[in-house]
Image (cartoon, rainbow, N blue to C red; front, side, top):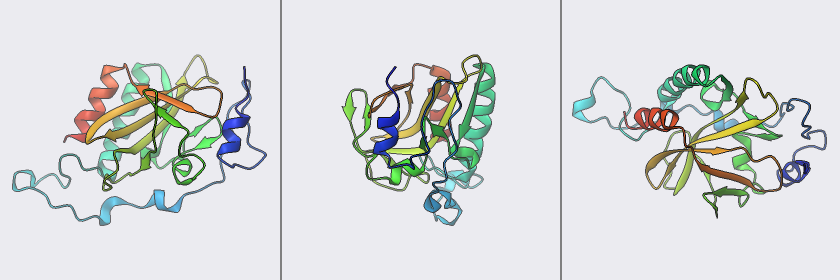
Length: 195
């Protein structure tokens, strides 16, 4: 199996970070202070019909992050999997690629492939940008019986529609994503997004 050293090198991480099929991934020292920015200071006008809900349809907030966290906790138990997510304030690590820091690394752009199309992606945890493809949250985990085989999820908005992308890429410089086949995960995210 080809080493992930190529992936690590294009992200310009320190030489001490590498992937080994027999060990867990190392934690990253890279931080992205802007990723910690709370959306609570955003002023989003609420419609008259949603006076009890501080968020509007299609918006994303720390409250929805908490709801996604709760949903993922239940879903991962059902799937016999374990995930670390940005929705819990964590920095998920996918074979040495730390999120959300990777989104701010210019070298990372051009290495994400969605449904066989190479695309730039924007980290947008408040869903405020006009980007065609933006990621609201990231989760990295594994099946409980395969601790070294990682799974990466992007909870994203593509052309205004909520979509969950999954990658299980294990080598090479590209990270390949496709829409998840898990209807429960897709529908759960879409329901939260459209609240």
